[in-house]
Length: 134
Image (tube, rainbow, N blue to C red; front, side, top):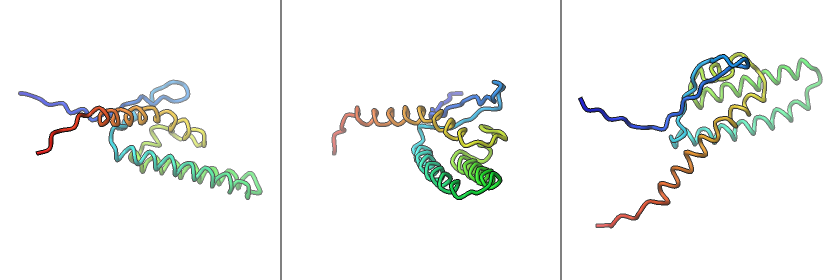
């Protein structure tokens, strides 16, 4: 039987914990335009939420208030990532960890894949020869 393989551009990354143990495989498609739009929106959303966190932290009077705010913000970020990449993604990528820096690490880690895919998409159209119109 003949077969056809359609390359969608999906990327699979091994997710390792702090000790180097594999936690699972994170799959995403940086070539998917709709997915790329979601990632750009996610990055903007996380930047806005981070600014909001900094402002709200200034209003906190106790360590408990700061910890509650941190917990709320991390929970929000995890939910935003699940909304972008699918339910369970934040659990796979972050486990039970709760720190703000891990979200930056995540976005910095996947951004090169999206940048490369974007450049490849643009290159295809830049190098495309015009077709004759009938």
